Image 1 (cartoon, rainbow, N blue to C red):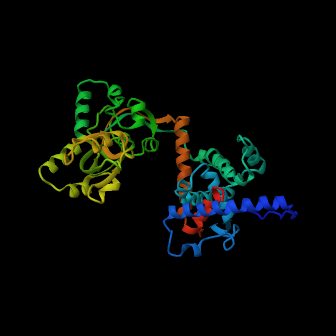
Image 2 (cartoon, rainbow, N blue to C red; image 1 turned 45 degrees about the vertical axis):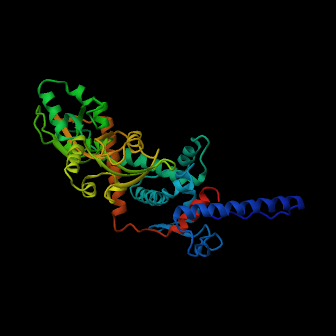
Image 3 (cartoon, helix red, strand yellow; image 1 turned 120 degrees about the vertical axis):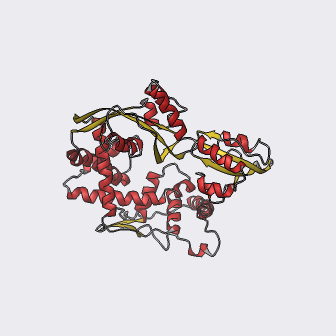
Length: 424
């Protein structure tokens, strides 16, 4: 927690020092004015008499409480230091995207510290100092709380949660690959049924769309229940693995929420400004080439672009506007720009594959290779299960109605904190 520093004895300034000091203060006032304008622009609050309400240290000093976690209070000085720590090297605009996350980090860290004490787990000042000094250059003691929680989390994981994760469990060895569409999944399944190699197809960059499955060429190895959702960010494969028979190749199984790094654009350019390097376009981002072909056929048959965009597009910036989008050259992917700035006006594109965007939805092909009802869990999988148990525990602390967590930071205070964190 922030403490007041002892006041230094005042010293007399020579005329030359006084002149230099006055010049420095004048420069600082200019920089301060510019800094305030930058942050105000970020917040969109310029005008409306905001300058008269501006949050300045004369009225809201650094020792004002801005966050409370149960009986522990954190002042503005502490919050600014945490912004500096988590937002090191960021611009004012970048740091503004971090302000709420830092609040959450402070709250989370304190809840973890308080609950760890109840569990009899603690970290000594000597351990904190050693960790601070292990950095190059060493970290300031201002960040002792952050380091202490990092050490606490390690002890919680390895001492407390280690006891909750078994060493033996039911496990399944499974093969899996994630494909963009049902038609593609059926084609690949037919190849597998005809004898083609699962590993070869699962490792194909143009087919397999899950990074883990592709890297492992489809063989996810032996896994206990609960690990695959952590690796793949979906529960579909885990559910199949523990409910299916050995040796049966699945039919294509749809996964609505799974994210993949590919999408297909349909674009129609309505106008271009070559001098400003902008274009007004109608766009849709579709999940698969099959879907893009189907939607394109409906457009060619006369259906309304805006209606279909609102129903199917995964491009958040234009979906609500029925696909209307103004793009500046260089802000989208190269394949998008190629059509937007070089194609004929009014012509609807063919589906344009773009591996620089993400979309959701696709189809799994899976096969359980073997079953063991009492197999040793690997260290890697136990670490994943311990980390998952720890994350669920922390979430439960936030959700516990007994936890009294409150932030007093409004937009003006956050903006002032940003300015102070970047050197105000």
